[in-house]
Length: 258
Image (cartoon, rainbow, N blue to C red; front, side, top):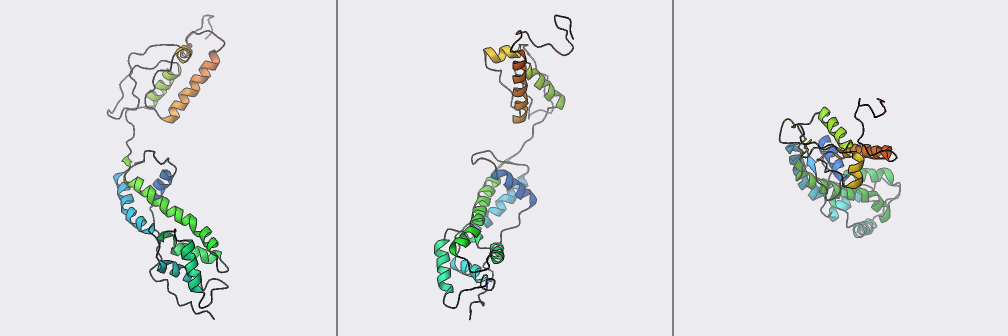
């Protein structure tokens, strides 16, 4: 007869804090960034929220005590078909502690105990518990790392002073190889961008063939991809023809064609 069913879980099993949708979304985004990539948040409150969660996750990442693992296993006693007999539980507990000592406190939670009760029909081996809990251990460590990055992130400052028409005009000039000497389409210090000056016409093919392209202003990666693709098409279209500058829209060719 089994006499271990009186083991009480008490307040020993922790639960992870419930994260807001904003924090969860930011953490998911940070998880996709490189380790040394710059992290930005939209509001100061985002950093404050993350900083407030760091101490709790530091506790969840601390080593688990024997009493916590004992309470976690005790919840399985009445849930499986072959619970350990009296006198066997201590040995099973010791095996779990030795085999899974590297799992943090947050791993042995109510949520994982509930999952174990649904998964295991019979008393699990150490390897079975390892397979169940390892993803949870990795998750709490990853969440702590990303919360720390979020708590020290920079505030995102969107670019100002650029209209869609100005952006389209810049793309046209860049594709044709006519870039302003001092372009600045992502000016963050003024409410309006100045009209580019000192524009020097030059055939795009000659620019790309004889020297490196003029430096681009700090545009978005997507915008630069558009420019590079358009330049490539321009080169391919003129590879068998003359090196004259591309005709502007509405300008007639030497043969009188529009």
